Amino acid sequence: MTVKRFANLDTLSRAAADQLAMLASASKGACHVALSGGSTPKRMFQVLAERGKKFLPWERVELWWGDERCVAPDHPDSNYGMTRANLIDPLGIDPAKVHRIAGERDPDEAAADYERQLVAALGTPPVFDLVLLGMGPDGHTASLFPGSPGLTETTRYVIANRVDSPLTKGPSTRITLTFPAINAAKHVRFLVAGADKAETLAGVLQGPRAVYPSQHVASADLAWFVDDAAAGKLA
Image (cartoon, rainbow, N blue to C red; front, side, top):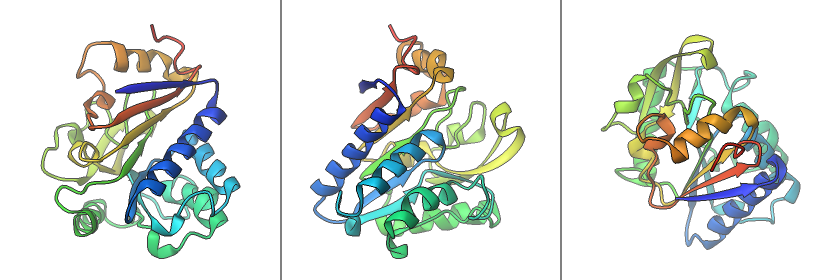
C-alpha cells in the first residue's frame, strides 16, 4: 500500500488524472475503469474534461461504476449523472463505452443485471484495470457502509446493499460492487480529501484492522491519494 499526499483537492485530482492516463495508455487493449461518485472524483472528471480527448486514448476506455444510488440517471444524486455532466458529455465519450448501473430499476434486479454484464465483459471474477474509490467520514467506500450486509458478501460481485446511516439520512438501498470485485482489480486508487475525513483516515491507515469498511480493500496494487486536510492526523 502506498500513500501519496497532495496540497489540496486540485493537485490531488490532477495527479489522479495523470494516473488514469498512464494506465490507459499502457493498456494493450480495452482499459476497464470503475468510477466513484462524490465531490472528490468530480474535480478529477473536470480536470480530464479540461485536458481534452487527446489526453488519453478514450477510445479504449470502458467506463463502469463502483456504486449507484437508487435514482433515475437525471436525478441530482445519481453518480452516473454527475459523471455525465462533468466528463462524459464535455468529452463526447462514445455511449457504447459507458456502462451505467440502472439505479431507477428494482435494486436487486439492477444489481444482478450489472453483475451479468461485468462477468460477460471481464470474466469471473471481473477484473478491472482500475477501480477508483472514495471514503466517507465513517470509513465506508463504494456503498459498503459500516454495519451493512454487503461487508460480509463473498460470492456476489454486485449487490443491492441495504444501509442505515446518518450519511444516507436513514434506511436506504445502494447498488454497489462488493469486496470480491474490488479486490480482484489490477489497480485500486482511493481519492480522499477534506478535514472531515482526517480522523477516520488515520484510523484506517494506522489503527487496528477490520474496524472500517475501507480496510477490507486489499488489491495487489493499492494507493491512497490524500490531500493535506485529510492527512492532518496521520503520524
